[in-house]
Amino acid sequence: MTKEQTWSQRFESALHPAIARFNASIGFDIELIEYDLTGSQAHAKMLAHTGIISSEEGEQLVAGLEQIRQEYHQGKFQPGVDAEDVHFAVEKRLTEIVGDVGKKLHTARSRNDQVGTDTRLYLRDQIQQIKSELREFQGVLLDIAEKHVETLIPGYTHLQRAQPVSLAHHLLAYFQMAQRDWERLGDVSRRVNISPLGCGALAGTTFPIDRHYTAKLLDFDDIYANSLDGVSDRDFAIEFLCAASLIMVHLSRLAEEVILWSSEEFRFVTLKDSCATGSSIMPQKKNPDVPELVRGKTGRVFGHLQAMLVIMKGLPLAYNKDLQEDKEGLFDSVKTVKASLEAMTILLREGLEFRTQRLAEAVTEDFSNATDVADYLAARGVPFREAYNLVGKVVKTSIAAGKLLKDLKLEEWQQLHPAFAADIYEAISPRQVVAARNSYGGTGFVQVSKALIAARAQIDR
Image 1: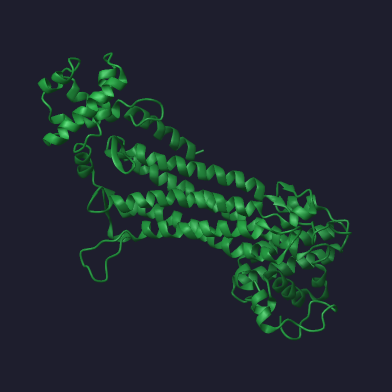
Image 2: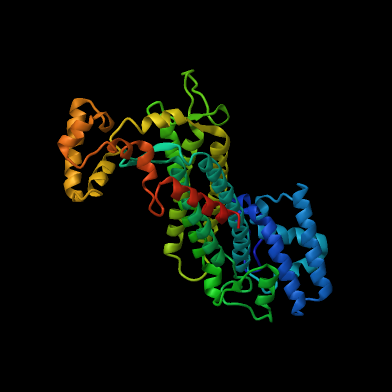
């Protein structure tokens, strides 16, 4: 605030300039201006509806607020530090436009319930945008998966070759993660969409307001039942940051796989020039910057969640200035999640190509079909644990001999156990290994095709 401004007659002097800068939030809470204007218009309409101000005054306030909205869109309204925050900036400009009636806008309202309302309106809107981006991300995963039902890729546990799987099945795992993210955001949105407007500073108001009226105007589902809780609750923000963190976990896991797959050691995918960069010194390099950045940005969202938890853990009721610190982390998390989803969607759609020949070779150069040998024997009456131990011995001797299981002659198989027959080679072929896993949710081609149909129906609802 400038040296001419004081809070009220309670104060004899204004804030020290450095403290005013430290106290100000206008540098970041301008992000809320659209929501502040919308919330204030609803509040003005309620004041007129209840007779607290006249209908004419209500109309003036609503029109003045709409003028501010247009001025902001046109770049004519750009408040600075002197305004302290977006709420004061709007009220000051409103009074310049409509005169003293502008000073009536804050009747029966505190900045505490005002900022709580703005933040919820903002987050409700952003959640819907993120859900839309998740659907687009899922759609691209499905587009790729539908082309690769019968493309095989090594499956891993402990980052060791385990069993081959359908590439579509692998991608559908990320689809399911994203589906949980989408549903989780819906759960969070229900608790975001509760109105604190009318809770006042902490104890409600003496004016005959109608909180349900403003809630209806703003499309809130409900109102806070306790005014102390209404102005101090940030559970909804913490829940969102938890959901955002999980979205980033899932994107980061996929990013890590793309980074591995694009390396010379794996060579499962080729990065296209539109989504890769080069080295400043090594001309042969093509770097996976997009997935690396997504992997790196994940930590900052985790940090914002931790910061919010720490802010809240020791706050007594009701509002405390600490809560001003909720916004920068929240805003940054929203932007980070949206940017990461967009980047990963573009990377999948336009920036990489699966090297199907290399993948086909990869599933033939290991012992990931060993379990199928044990299953082969078990299906012929050999106790599974006995079969398991026998196959372990076969793998050991094959490694020593520099052979794979497919290289063993039929006589060698039958020396190991008389249950082996000529069909063992078909049983351990990579394609059959995958096709045979036809249990619900498995990687068998029939199950994967059904899963793709169900997934497509899920996002098309």
